[in-house]
Length: 144
Image 1: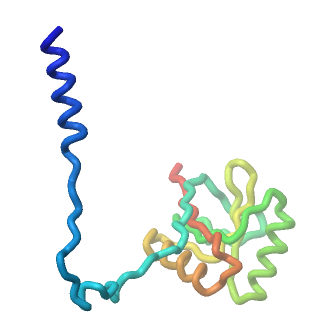
Image 2: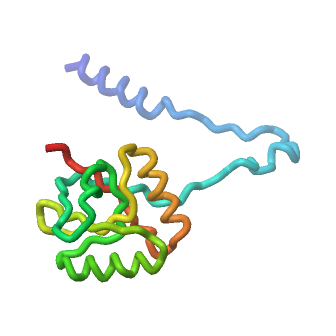
C-alpha cells in the first residue's frame, strides 16, 4: 500500500512539475518587434469532394460520360430545374452538362477532366472568379 502512495505522489509531481517556463527576452530590438512580412492566412474553403455513380441522362451530351472528375455548380431533384440552371450558366459563358446520380439527383457540371489536380484547380479558379459559385465542388465518378 505504501508503494502505491509513493507511486501516486511521484506521478502527481511529474504531472504538475513538468511545465515549461516561457521567459521574456531581456531586451527587444525593433527588428524583433516587426511582424513577418510573408504571413498569409488562407481562408479559402476546402473543396468538397463526393464520389458517386453517375450517368448521362437522355438528351445530354454522351461524351460527358467519358471523364472521371466533374466540377459541379448545382444539384437538383427535378430535371427541368437542372436544365434551367444549365441555360443560365450558358448565358454566363459556361459549357455545362447534366449528370444524374444513383439517387436521382441531377448534377450540373461545367467542366470534366481525366486528371484530379486539374479539376481541383478549376474548382478553385471558378470560386475565385465567380463569387456566386463559392460552393462549387468536385464529383468523382465511381468506377463500376
